[in-house]
Image (cartoon, rainbow, N blue to C red; front, side):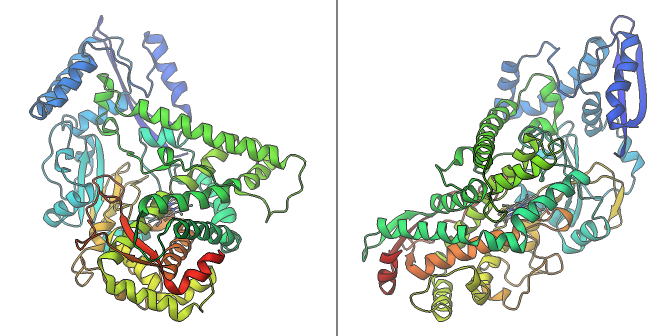
Length: 580
Ligand code: HEM
């Protein structure tokens, strides 16, 4: 494990005796060293979780934060409180490293900045909150506006967190070619700790052997060409189930309204459930819908220290529900494989994982297994469902493109044949529509944050170790110097596109070592579902107004208004639909 430098300081009220040590040690030795240092001095050992030891109350904090004008006063008060507490409270029990980072961000102890003189450009920052006040709109839009002023390589502070923001393919190339291993880590946060089984799941775990194991295992079981071939029947059956349901609910020749958001989520969720556990079930969008992953306390740990709970309670409750659900799936799988002799092909994902557990029980604990199942419902569901919702919204607003797509399907799929995976390679325009959709609306507009494990350089600037990297894919996809008429929905621009990141200007599934492993599966499911819906039904908007394309403000790009559309079975398809 990499060497880490920990800065530990402790102040004693009675003797005003200051103990300050710079300790360089292995992460695993840290606890031992802390005890060794603290015990003889009668000091409470440091723990990552903050505890309230000062007179400020949560209600006072909430009252302050309700008045926006008082927020800056509150920041100053926090700084004062910190200094006061450090000087006066001998029993302070908190994470000194985080406190040091807060001080650092408020420019009181800017050690890193002194060491790294050639940092990328940055707007002026406020004490404590850094540049957070600049993120007034959706983060990808606010960062795009800032990058127009400060350039495609910027260095910001979200509270105490140093953040490198890049918004050009050249900078992305430098991060993911020259510095690919340096940026193959993920930053730590309360959400990834609680929801990610203490950073052991594939999306949140640091780059290293454990991550490689998880990625290899998921590739073999889910993402490889052979596994995708195996799961094609599930995608086909669930798509047909959806089409059947739409047909049964339809008014035949009359137009009928349907909520496509809910429909797409149900489809993707059911595909995941059947692959994981061999059954579909009630949709759990309460547990697996897009979730706010950002806790303000990750950026301003002082808030936690003064008693502000942030999202912790919410996260713990969500994790408990998810954990119970996943444990039930494991127990069910365990009961089913006991005494049975299923072949590898017949096993569900859970059953395959349980067989792997039997061979290596110490490594593949139930917790690791749950972490391997979780991304099927989190990373894999709303991303795919939201993209299909964006695609249909764009097609409804551009009936000419919808017509072209329908023609392509009719020309390539013989009458009476149901579309399946093997047809997708012929439907090039359908692929163009999906690519154009994820260019305009990448559901992860800033991808998933990375974290630098070493000092490096990007664009000639020094980037300190421990910086969070945000790649503004949304801004790159809409850069007029890279795309002609970037705001226009024009699937034709992807004609002849072979796939890949096209010189880092097309990165909706991320890049580098941590790029999305679910790309192939998502493209197949989206192609099959959109293609089948257009093959069987006619679609149009509810009225003459265009479908509202307003984006929500979170880190996931979802539509503010869920998509409702009108549909009716195509007359030429009614007999085929009746046989489904
Ligand atoms: C339209 C659908 C999807 C989109 C737009 C999408 C997008 C992304 C993006 C942007 C990342 C971050 C990549 C990076 O850090 O460079 C990612 C990571 C990931 N995605 Fe997807 N994804 C989709 C579907 C799926 C599906 C269907 C699955 C699995 C069933 C999946 C599993 C994952 C996992 C496990 C990671 C984390 C990889 C790692 O950190 O090593 N995704 N995805």
